Image (cartoon, rainbow, N blue to C red; front, side, top):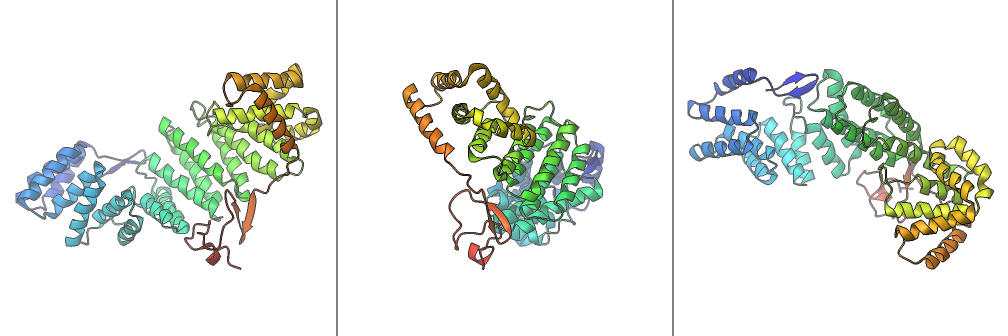
Length: 432
């Protein structure tokens, strides 16, 4: 009993709802007809506790009544009583296994309880075309992700997007946005050929969407999430193009998360200048420290700020040597360079020695480092010498034609393969 309005599935008008209830309850036995009608009214008005109580009353008089059990399961799901809902729906399906919508609800309840394999089995038995459920493909995709099958997860999220492309309907902007978020992430991670097309589809969705504060938060979160995929070189150009399109469309102009746009540009640049032989390890460390932020927020964390000030102290020791490299960075990596402009202006005005004194003052006054001034100064000098002698370390490793970022220890033969297949590394991308 739903209708569409501006492509978003919404509750029907009350008169339409009453007519639908009359048609539905006319098929029920007289003994429960009026009671079921009252339950449906409670559901329409979102009075789920009252709805649950009415269902219990019906079941007390008519134990095992299938319609009451189905509605009780829905009332419990709406209140996030997933344990109770799972038990109710399991009991109903044991008696009437052909109930498709309730099987979907049962799978969703199992997913909410973290029982992903069981949820997957239930959802695979259901027919999503027979009874549309707004969470079906999202939960199915998440179950596949949690059981190690990223390709099928990707296809599940794609199915909900395809439905929207064909019908223009969506359960809500936020649900569809979540499907796009997962779809595009998996496209990039799996090197899927439809990545560009899916990004274009997402941009079409954004053009039609109402940019509520919630949607803006979703969009900013998507950009932050996808920036973790910049280890995939082929994704970088598409990512920057998307961010630029979002910037030009002005979707986040009045959002507290607007700074995510600049953070995204700097993130992409950081991967390129790491691979650029014209940027050495010392300059890379400096640019990275200047560009660091706390997930797109306007203020840096104490740790990030202390690191930035330390790298400014280091650079003040040798800025003259890096004049040409700064000019090169300004041309090739303008967003990262822009973060260093204030430092360079201060250095020119104060001079290196005064600049270092000011940095020590800040580290002391703001208690960014738990040590006295002399200790801080000695540690900075020692770290500076180490950093000047450092070489760039490889960020990427190629395994079986797929590139991964090594964030910790080397992948061992019996470790899970990082591609997400669920197989051991030696049986997948580590196979000779």
